[in-house]
Amino acid sequence: MRIVQITDLHVGREGEDTYGVDVRANFLKVLDAARQKRPHYLVLSGDLCYRDGDPRIYEWIFEQMEGLDIPYDILSGNHDDPVMMAEAFGRSHLLKEGELYYSKIFSGRPVLFLDTTTGIVSEAQQEWLRGQLKGLKQEAMIFMHHPPLEAGVPFMDSRHALRNRGEVQSIFLAHPFNVNVFTGHYHVEKVIRKKNIVVHITPSCFFQIGQDSEEFQVDHYRIGLREIHWDNGVMMNAVHYLNGVTHR
Ligand SMILES: [Fe+2]
Image (cartoon, rainbow, N blue to C red):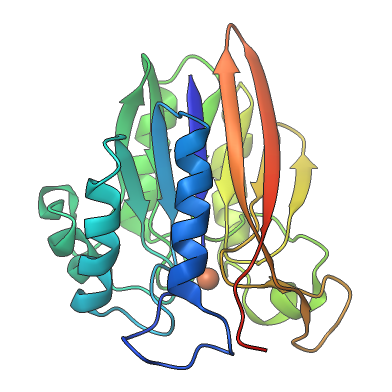
């Protein structure tokens, strides 16, 4: 199966200044590149909105996605509202106590989608996750907005990391198979492994963040998407970059 992951769109309200970046044009560019990969599934892994959830932003993104004719799934990031998002995308039935976490079958394989909007994986969600992994007698594929491991990006690790990552790691470490995690949030491209946990961080559609600095710094304005092929036990992963559209 072929999956394309797109993350951290940060679409603003109509006419809103977003650091001089044309985030809507960027998203459309990435979406067009995604379509050309002819994926079986598409995942938008959070931070669809620039600063906070807005139904009109979700509706605009929904319209672009519906025009694609590719099945897709959505995650809520720290700049989203999971309830508003689920409503705009017609997925309110997936909400549990206001959180948007669920599992889907992709080409016969269960894939898990977590909700880290609040910067943690809630107790209820941890319980659900344990149950899901218990029933899974194979490698896991998980999409979540925040990386569950520190990534060696000082600005993000020190200020914006998943706060209860230790608890989440314990759940993943208890799985007797590999746990392949795909995230966004950090606005970098990186792979981090700890024992059976492999975390792939996908670059943003907005801008990328400096990987060596304690302070916020833009690294560059190229934008990316991740392509994942998973067939016959072989997982191939590639990140593709495009030039971002800026008014700078
Ligand atoms: Fe984020």
